View 1 (cartoon, helix red, strand yellow):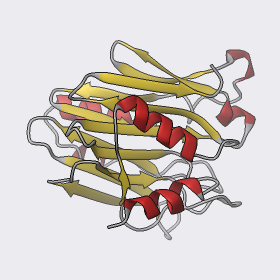
View 2: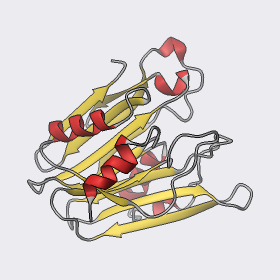
View 3: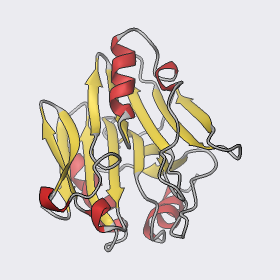
View 4: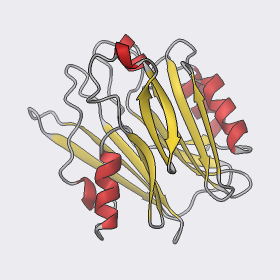
Length: 230
C-alpha cells in the first residue's frame, strides 16, 4: 500500500480529477474529511466555499457572473446526528433528510441519478463518517451504458489505519468528454493537522483548475477552507 504513489498519480500528475472526497484518520487519530472542487468553464470556476451554521456550501464568487446555478451551488458538508456527510451536489441534503428520518446512508441515495450534464454525465459522489461506530462510507452514482440509467456503487470501511483515507473523484483525468472515475476508492495520505493536510492537497492539485478545498478535523473541531477566488 503505497499511498505516496497514489497521491502522485491521482492528484499531482492528474490535471483534472474534478471533484474529490477523502475520508479517513490523520496520524493523531482524528477523523478527517476532505473535499475539493475544480473547474474548467467560467461558470464552474466562479465559486467559493463558505461555512455558516456548521454547514459548508458553495457560493458564487461573483453573483453577477452566474450562468447556471443548478449543478454548482449546493451544500457540501453537514452533520446529521452522529454522521458527518459530504457530497458533490444536492444529494448532501438528500442524505441528510434520509438519515434524520431513520434511513441509512445508502438507502437515502436509492432515487439519485448521475448529473444531467451531457456529454460528461458527472458522477454523484458522497461520503460520510459515523462518530458512534467509526464507520466510513463512500458512494458513487455513475452513468450506466443503458440510456439514462445510473449504476450505484457503495463502499463501507470498518477500519482505516492512522494517516490514511479513502478517496473517490468524479473523473480519471482531463478530456472531452471527461472520463468518469472507474474502479474502487483508493487510499491517500492524511498526515498532520487539518491545516497541513489542506496545504498538502491544495499544492498537489493542478494550479490552473483547482477552485476550492475544505478539510475538517472532526475530533479536534478544526475546519480549514482555501478558496482560489476569495
